[in-house]
Picture 1 (cartoon, rainbow, N blue to C red):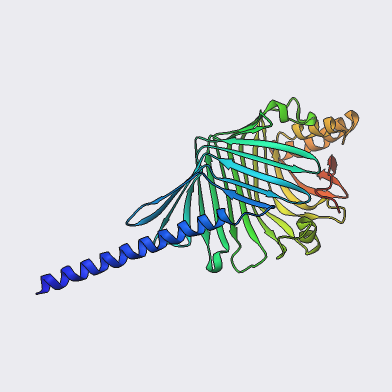
Picture 2 (picture 1 turned 90 degrees about the vertical axis):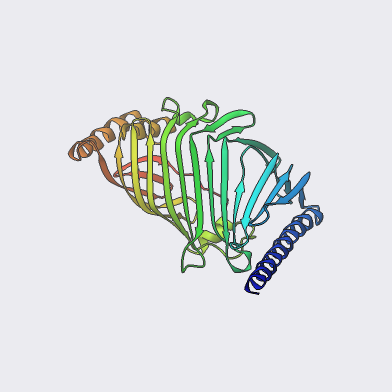
Length: 336
């Protein structure tokens, strides 16, 4: 008797689990098809094929030929790739893993100008976690061997590129953002004149920040202005750059002034500061004579620190100051 009862329980549980799996799979299929069937003149979502599997423990979605196109009065955006895969476990409905391996095409136009980017990778994964209501809680992207082409020419390549975004705990208007690039190489065609002559290989770029004061209305016409007007800041918890013979680490706080130029203060440690002075001369922020004088002052400070220059960095009145020396002009990041 116990054997029959146990068998019945197992069969009932298996049937319930199977029913739950097919219900969730049908819901996912319905949501994807609905998104692709409700296109408008300003929004278009399409795909060539859809497969759902993964029974019994996962919901696995494979979409071939996905396309997204957005357009408006100010311009448009398009994205396309050959295939995207997604996996979600039934017991973790708010966590999904995306397989983004392959080639991705991006196009956007604004004010009569257009640009096209193509991102290749050897392997790329994304992790998405949401909270109640479907709001994004955490997004992580990990790309191996990225190669970015800008209008056909190599713009950036590298060994690995990672990005992480999460809602800051106990802060509704802030996000934590981190970016790390290993073994990055800058394409010759995209190097600005002031960086000519510098190494095009960046061994490490590691940025960890908290962005505060984000506007709740993300559809604002000028969201960066709304962020500035609301007292938004970028708290730099860590910045580390290994570029050729130069190494920079810094922490501090940044914002935008009334002309939309960066403003703020950081504490930095720099090895190989001569490269920064050379950039300042090429950009026109410093004369040759000023380069000699600044090099002498900063060289003494670096010598006192065992070859490492420890100085405050100020962004003020449209200029970047390295200690007492202005090394660059700062342009507005957006129209006022």
